[in-house]
Image (tube, rainbow, N blue to C red):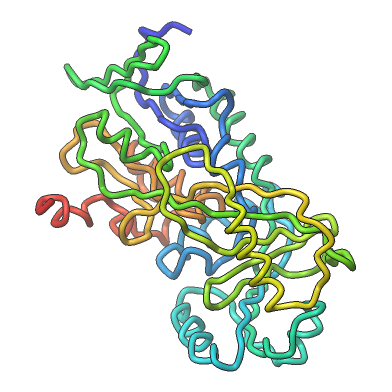
Length: 373
């Protein structure tokens, strides 16, 4: 690759966030996509629980999720699943509050009778009597969606550099010089910071004040259960945030819904977190666990208000934030990438993004806190 080539945009991070916005930008501009690992999608994207759930991420994320749904469905990346938020009698107030928080968002949520809950979740213990049904929930083909965006970017002429950990960012004469760990250099007018757990580190390299994006470890274990999990089992989530599980080829993917503060790293599961997940699962069902077949962990990165950060930095010229997408970055990728590209290219909203207020996600919301830091 000619490393002296000038790009309009250099996107740092080739997970779902970086790949999707690079693809959208590549329709109109010369784009470089830079990935530190041997292949794109090694970290959070490759370790996703792979579901699209309208409530996931909270009411503030709903516009991005719902705006992405049609795109994902039309391209065949969604398979209907349905979701159940469950609780016990003492959780009834939490159920009501959750339901009310989504009024007016367009999300469909239905209360279920206890008998219906038992029909949908085999082996559930009798004390779990409260349930909210979210029928639009679907599985996402995460790998397919990620490859779709990478292929789109390449088809439109974007360059992709892997094994290219960024070690230096210097702005002069209206452009950035980007230095890689192996001595590579590139030039770009605008940096798009899609580095996930490393987003604040990239900001520091650029001399930009971090906004406080922090990574948290999330654990998933794959259980072989007896009898096997039915294929039509919904995604099941604890209304109190203690667990979720879903079926996959007769197995169950189980998470303790943990959020353990972490440094940016190649996350690995801890045995204690797997044990906690199993203990919580056994308090919900009497399903027999035959074996723990696999386990993994990934990092979910959040801004202080747990909302994504999309927009130009207030002080860092030519530095655009596209990070802090927590565990909802996959399900919101189409609308987020389209919105980010429109902001970068100063384009008007289209049919996908018309109902999204970009100011809600702008870095400007942290201005007072950053000035006092």
